[in-house]
Length: 300
Image 1: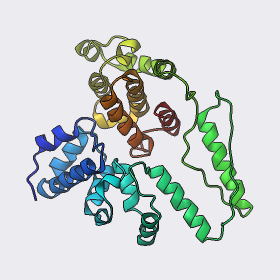
Image 2: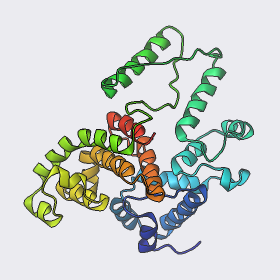
Image 3: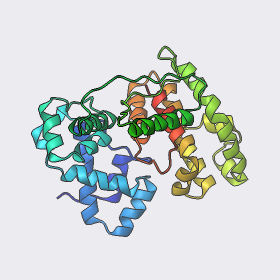
Image 4: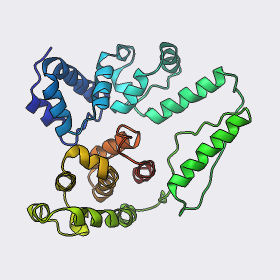
């Protein structure tokens, strides 16, 4: 097993950590994480996770992906290129894995949401729910997303009380028009984000504001992602506290940058991968239900 240094793995992952944009890259990252987990002591691992904003649950998922022996059954180029989808494949039972493998559904475009929907549908069919009726929920654009989710939960409850089962497909909520330009999406995100940033700037001390040359909500909105994160961390007191307090703001900043760099394919890909990871619940203890829905729409 190759030796892994803290500096070397840190340089590969970055801050916040990114795990790869292809299946090959993700599997290589998982192998390095597994080596680090064996070679480093618990304190080194904990400090590394804190510095690079890797939740211990995510660290464990990367280890599970590395230890999984299913990848030899599929050409690496046909595996999904993000760790969340690979981990969803890890969690399948042996029967489920064989079924989805034989069906030909394993591909680069496979997402964790699609896997979970397939799994839920399969379970429902096996339990006798083998007749299906499409269900579409339409709502005004100004509807509160939390209320929309609560409504879906209520519908599911009503269905269960009447002997039915409601399964929501992996379709993102639509708030921005698919014809919207990147500038229009940025403007929409800005309207959501600026009032929140003003409160953060007000909470920050003068030393923090002066050190990073950020004196207003507009300064913070247009700061680099690195300086934006530094400002949040210093205001909250630590990176962990920052995510607990400002997780939504951080994600919306990434969505803002994703649309700002619309002419840079590489940067958009990096931002999208990170946003997809966050919107799929990797830090669900941090990201609110509302912000998840906004994020999914920002990258649709």
